Image 1 (cartoon, helix red, strand yellow):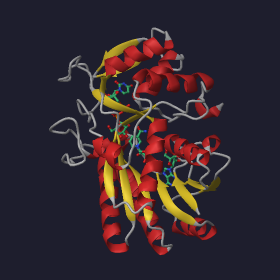
Image 2: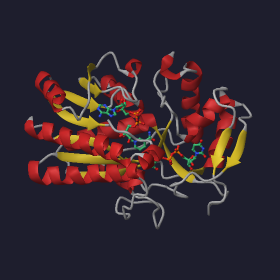
Image 3: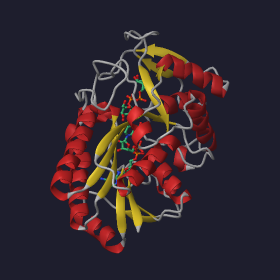
Image 4: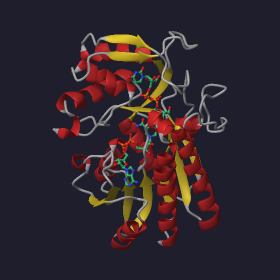
Length: 329
Ligand SMILES: NC(=O)c1ccc[n+]([C@@H]2O[C@H](COP(=O)([O-])OP(=O)(O)OC[C@H]3O[C@@H](n4cnc5c(N)ncnc54)[C@H](O)[C@@H]3O)[C@@H](O)[C@H]2O)c1
Ligand SMILES: O=c1ccn([C@@H]2O[C@H](COP(=O)(O)OP(=O)(O)O[C@H]3O[C@H](CO)[C@H](O)[C@H](O)[C@H]3O)[C@@H](O)[C@H]2O)c(=O)[nH]1
């Protein structure tokens, strides 16, 4: 029996595949390489290049392989892009979820772990955010992920597909051996952008908004190491295989860092000045997002190992130095 990973050529998917392979679990990857990289595909996994929305392709995969459970990462996930072209997000993220759930139903596969996001909450009215905090997405990306959660809920009640939705906060870091890491093109995330300035790929870091109602005026986010996040997926899968019921879990460190604190930590880790300038707010950014991840710690027995922000930035920096042009190397 194998675990199917959709989006296994992407940043978080490839890290999760590496963890599954390390545990000796047979792994099958589906990815259309729209944002993923062929060289991030783990050679120990069976790889099918194709689109989760393509039912004939999915039939081939589910016919050829004995799939026991699915971990679904395949999505578009750039917030600003989702505001310019929301239907692209509903098509890929929600359309992909429908085809995946239909295929799972038809092949009697009853366990699903999938990527959700802190963006389902929008601007919360209290911190830290628990799973019960009101969901009020402020961008189409977050809305598309919340719709995926609702599709999963109805698929559970009608077809008995049990699921875990993991609502990640801000993901950072890279594999500790520096082999796999974050290579989004274009890159929009804070830590890799700061490191692109550090290694000379960009001239200056632009700090989006310095007048927020936070201690130093910049946004506060909760960072989780990608290796800890990968581990959360494996624990969630085991929870379902052991009879766990469908549920959603926040995955974050429960500690907030401002953008200025991240810049300062990156300067310390790299030993470089990293030129930066203040810039206007980026539309749609909530001031502060910090997770309460008590539920994942208790129910899934998830205990992050890398809760030090310098360790997260240090691993991302090692990957950036080993791969100055990302996977193009
Ligand atoms: N990176 C973050 O900070 C973050 C935060 C919260 C949630 N997430 C979610 O985690 C998941 C993985 O994010 P990531 O940062 O690894 O993104 P990524 O872009 O690196 O990986 C996504 C992968 O899915 C593939 N893909 C996309 N659409 C597909 C389709 N229709 N069929 C087959 N493959 C397809 C891409 O080629 C890529 O390899 C996404 O669902 C994202 O929404 C990411
Ligand atoms: O060049 C940059 C890039 C980012 N930022 C700031 O850095 C912070 C973090 O931005 P990211 O784009 O790295 O992350 P987000 O918090 O916007 O979003 C991330 O976390 C969200 C949930 O909180 C979603 O899951 C989303 O998919 C994921 O990208 C924000 O204040 C942003 O304005 C800058 O100041 N300059």
